[in-house]
Length: 81
Image 1 (tube, rainbow, N blue to C red):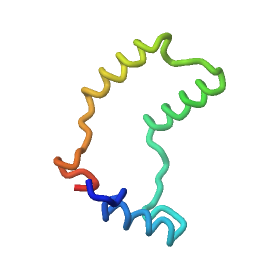
Image 2 (image 1 turned 180 degrees about the vertical axis):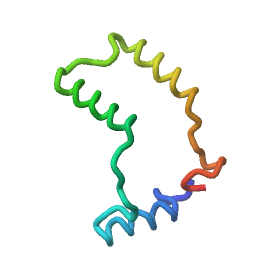
Image 3 (image 1 turned 90 degrees about the horizontal axis):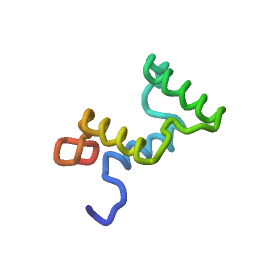
Image 4 (image 1 turned 30 degrees about the horizontal axis):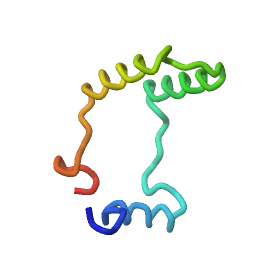
C-alpha cells in the first residue's frame, strides 16, 4: 500500500462529498431486508438485549454468514484496485 491512506478513486469520491456537501448519488428508500434489519436494531437498542446469548454464538453466526457472501478485494476488482 502506498504512503497515501486513500486510493485515488476514494479520494475523488470524498472530495466530491466535501465539495457538494452531499453524497454524489441519489439515496433511495431502503428495501424490505434493510428496513427489517433497521427495525431489529432499533428493538435491540430499545430493549437493551443482545441478539446472541453468548460470544461463541455470535462468532459462529458471523463465520456461517461470512462464507455465504463473497467480498470484493483489490485483486478481484474492488474499489481501490
